[in-house]
Length: 518
Image 1: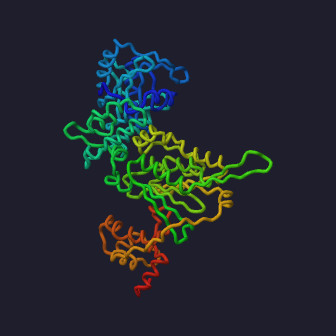
Image 2: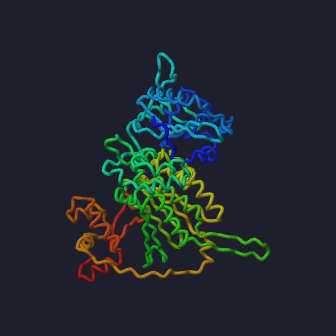
Image 3: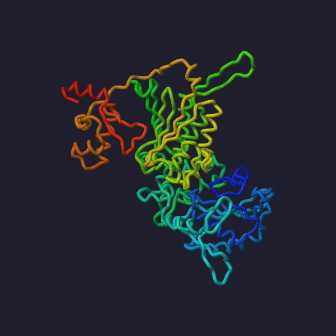
């Protein structure tokens, strides 16, 4: 057990803003070995992939689960004894599991906080009675604000999670801890108000990373975790090529000649904020309608920022970072659409998704969600789609559309433009520098000659006699698409099994100019 640490969060924020006991926090007025060990076991199992949780000892709460201030606290002369007993009790968890322990002072009272991240070796089991002579071990999970024994289907599902650590919480064994940026880690700690920020300057990157749980592995061979590289490396795309957001503007519609593309890269939180700021400054417009019979005017937005923010942050939260495809924000005169990969978990029914009642059974990125919540970028717990619906309705906008395919390969959130704003706003074409058609490389020429009608990616690759799919995508297919010489038949769902490719007008014209027949 790691003792004498400071939490990478603000404890007062944990207590005062996330007030009620829930799936990720439990209050204990005192040291109760049986109850505490069972709850630690449940957080270690992290059944919903929420990122584990916190046990706060010395903090009492009322019947509704709200903390009472000032807290009851723990006696100073009991702290060492509790820590020794806790260490012995944690060794009884199978396999052994040790939380991060921090003693905090709140309103003059001692609180002992146990930070229990989701474990790497689930399922975990704990004895139902720590002091019993003949112990019986059971797996425990969190159900809302309670710790319960996993039985029946829940136990079978927990067993199926054996060794299935979410991608963002895994070690990245091809990178070293030197890939993490200490200034970025310090900036995060300062922003969330963590007391650890005061000690960070004196810690090595490895020591700081271990306290923030973004570094793991043995002392002789430490590894950064994927979440650490995504949030605290200067260039995450070095490790995750698809970790970027592309904002693509079609001022004349998708059939127009003008396309303005702006890519955003960098640490996950910064990239998300920069993309949102760019969208807000360049594409969100407010229309004020004055009424002769009333003093208060009506204010309408083409796309309400809160809905755009929620949709984009959800895409960042729930996407698959093993995918090479970036998140894409497509803006046309009619809508703002956000495309990400993959689609929702199969536990989400399509009919529920369409009406905004989608509740995911399990979260894909438990650690990414944890950091986004600390930065106040997301609330988590399936509030995204209801919030988008609520904000769009309050603005008087058409109902947003949520789409995925049967294979759940992609997810699209469509925010239709407010019809009144669209009607009142004069047509404005932004000043852009015409893009010069890039040189057609020999590889792209071969693709153009291979595209006859509407064909699949595999058909093009086989026609070119190429065996390496990634090389084909990188050197042939993507440059041809980027040059606007070929196009997808289903651009909104690039990974669809029904996807085909065809020549564009520009592609046919180029072939004609070379004396080739399309």
